Length: 105
Image 1 (cartoon, one colour):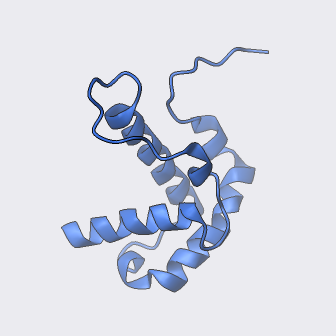
Image 2 (image 1 turned 180 degrees about the vertical axis):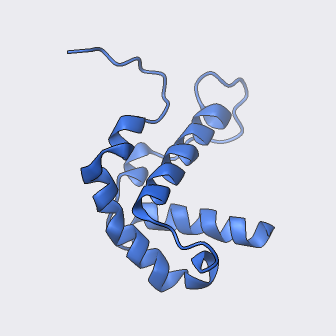
């Protein structure tokens, strides 16, 4: 058994695994139903949502992680990024990201 370095970064292999990518179905459908105007220009796939979560986790680690002096805020708990239920915390995190992207142009 290999020991994984605990650097706080995202577990990319977990989010790229086929069974994890499949779990994004609920999230994708919820986003399509509740945030259609923000995602209609570029409808997300399960794989693109998985990729976005990895990017958000990496950003969070770079900006708010333990290697940052004077981190402005605390990080969101990882359990929020593992909530694949429709209307769950991951849905709202991704909805906020798509809304921000849409508002920025």
